[in-house]
Image 1 (cartoon, chains in turn red, purple):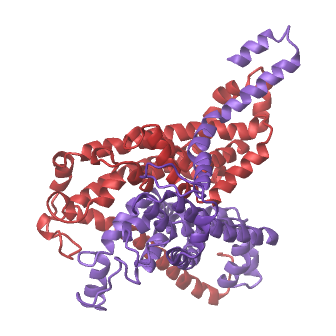
Image 2 (image 1 turned 135 degrees about the vertical axis):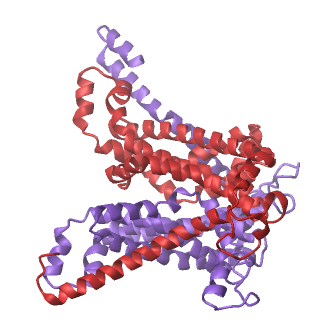
Image 3 (image 1 turned 45 degrees about the vertical axis):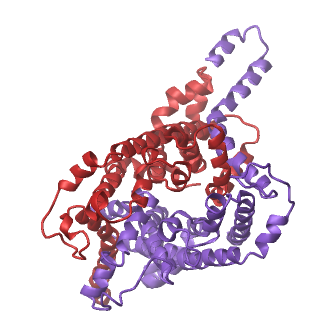
Length: 286
Length: 314
């Protein structure tokens, strides 16, 4: 760009650059402000619960302590969310690694059909349509109104996309590696465990992140399949906590809210480098 | 393990049986995924399909009767279903162009940022909404839109002086603004994620291509439409179809924002299905299944049509 000598374009370039950055900064603010607002809300004193003032007159950090200790079911709800999310992430990632491996490096009849089915399922409103029958299945298995029961449908939410992402990752790995390991006498299991597993990190990070976000925030299934406050997850509690008095005054719900979104942001901040690498490595090539 | 054993025993056995054993264990890789797929996706969808031909009511003890196509016939002349489909379609038509074009523009701008540090910072901010789960976004925006304490109205009233407290817009609660309000929220939610998606696509365009076009006298606008967009077409078309599908079958945000109020624009065919299956009377799941399948088929017609159009262009 520096190679353009004409004075006209040299004058135009800074103006364009300024405009460009203004637009970008505007969008960045649009993205950040709602999150900043809810953090500020969680720090407002109770007397300002209903005021439209954006900036609190003084910062009150007591709501965080209050919601954790005084709202009796809340620690339970947090535990439910953590338990369901971790189980879902673990199981789905395992299924996705095995499935992705099978679709790339292992001889399977009907492989093309399987891949076609997985892709097709991305376009079909499975989650919505299967709901009626999932309720029935869970009831028959005695899993209605249990925390463990949520894990089964949660695993399927992103299973197809997870397998496809891992398939993309496996396709990036050199086939010679697999060949060499096969010639050395390793079966497909040993090849996966000892030769390929260390190379999968970035892909596993992407898949875990996708599943973490969807399981941590899942609402529709959780609200349909559970009834009691003590087996509910955080998003359901938050969505049904009607604004108002006492326990659920706005600053207090906002504190619960900030607690709910923090793990995702922290985890993401820790692994973002791997995440971006995973994305460019093959996660985007469906 | 089984493979190691069969290898050692392979001296005596024929090669063929070792292969067969291997093929059999190969399927083992897919067993965990298949278990979940069949149990909680394939079976439920087929079961719902079967239910749609019965008068199944969940809370009634009498066994369901086979009613043939009656549910589908009823649905065809059900005005609530028609309005529901129409509302979902209105939402989709507002949502899809915005959620594709705004991120595309933003990605084109960020792609031109020279400083790698700044570019990295931007990407990080972009992904913040993407790591907040959807339903939590909906809860947040429900507060943002709140008539009384929501900051959106506060800004419109106190900063811009567009309204007074009495005339301020009522965003949610079944007003005509409800659908646009959901659209704005959804666009905000997808903004960062889609931009990152496009940035990855832009990174794959060789840098000398836009350079060459600039030297040939193309301005930035022409560059965007003639070089960038065609190059992004594969990603773009997949995203359009995917978003069309998700937008037509949106339900969580409508439940959180509008509940089961039938006059609300957020009462789409998906909410109607849910209402029938889990709320109304004896839980009319047979009829709800038919509504679900019809709605799904209606949107699949568009999805397949769009996939066909995009494919033939490649």
